Every structure is written in structure tokens, then in C-alpha cells.
Image 1: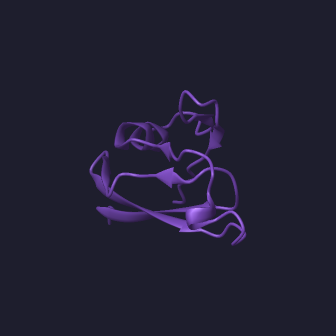
Image 2 (image 1 turned 90 degrees about the vertical axis):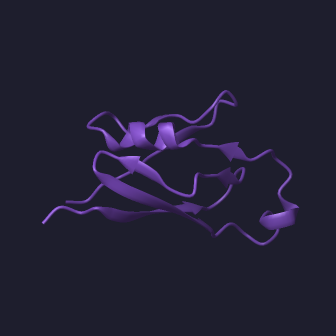
Length: 87
């Protein structure tokens, strides 16, 4: 049975905040990214000093294809966005 909806959990342990789309399509599936900030309270929320990284639906969908998942997130040079799919 094919999966038509899924949740993508993204945990922030440190570094800049991330802005994600509400949802995006990957093939025939609708994906809902869920951003979970588990960084120390001294650097979370309003204490965050760096500009957030914006990750577009197109960038997320590109990691859903059968391509390497490690890729640069943006012009700020932050790397290591990894999406792992389980079957």
C-alpha cells in the first residue's frame, strides 16, 4: 500500500533556526515537515542571534529523490541537511 502522506521530523540541536514550508510534494506523497527545537534554552527562541535558514519546498523535495541527501542548505554555507527515508 503506497504512502500518500508523511511527516518529516527535523530536530535542531544548535545553530540557526530553520524556516520550512507547511507542506510539500515528493512524488505522489504529501510531506509535512515538523520542526522540533531541542537546543539549549540559552540559544533557543528569542535568544537566537543568527538569521534563520530558509529551506524551500523545492530543496526538501530534491532530497526526497534517489540522490545524495547531504547538500548545502543555502548561500550562508550551512551544510549537512540530511533527510532519511525509511521503507
